[in-house]
Amino acid sequence: MKKLLRRLQKLLQRLVIFFFASTILSVVAYRWLPVYVTPLMFIRCWQQASRGETIRLRHHWVPLTEMSKYMPVAVIASEDQRFMQHHGFDFDAIGQAIKEQQNGKRRRGGSTISQQTAKNVFLWPRQSWVRKGLEAYFTALIELCWSKQRIMEVYLNSIEMGDGIYGAEAVAQWHFNTNAAGLTRQQCALIAATLPNPLRYDSSHPSAYMLRRQTWIMRQMKHIDLLPTEK
Image (cartoon, rainbow, N blue to C red; front, side, top):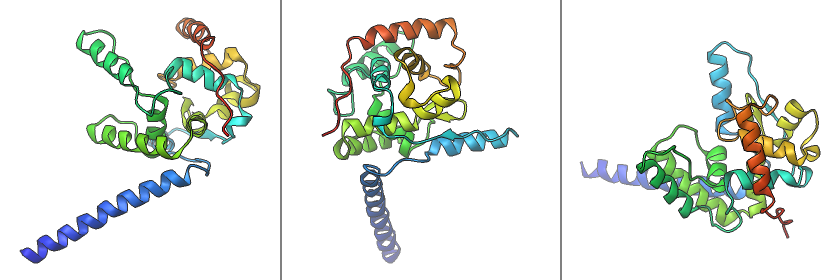
């Protein structure tokens, strides 16, 4: 029995060491390497195949310098206005989201762009306490190892922006017949308006609600500085 316990203890220690070593190395590697595929892309392809549909995966990595200068501003205005100030977690937004939920108001997320990036690149979309814990871990890692510009670059290349569409370059090509660099201020705001639910909201055929949200985002963008160039 003692031998078995020692073996289990050694196995557990090795698994813990492997987990931390592999995750830290992955985060460090992605500080420079493009993220060509994410877990969500695999999940969506599997869902499409299981429904007998043609697999749709439109994704093309481009550097942040080859995107419209308004694209980071639009998502900051829409998703995380304290992005440049916080270190991965916006506790004010989290507290407000909890308070609204307790008061029975419409639920809203408190996730920052850093948290969404951690989830998109390393984890799965389904909510659970395990995933939230891992999300916090990866968020802390990328905030430690990556610059804000790199977090934004990965975010804008990996986030789902439509049915089978991932990243600014793909949505620019498929919805606006241009490239990520050619997106206008209005188009960037419209794309940002879809991010709460890009499978429901289509930036190529905006609803009245989306147009109202686009207008709100554009007003907020006036108060957001352009993302500074990484030094």
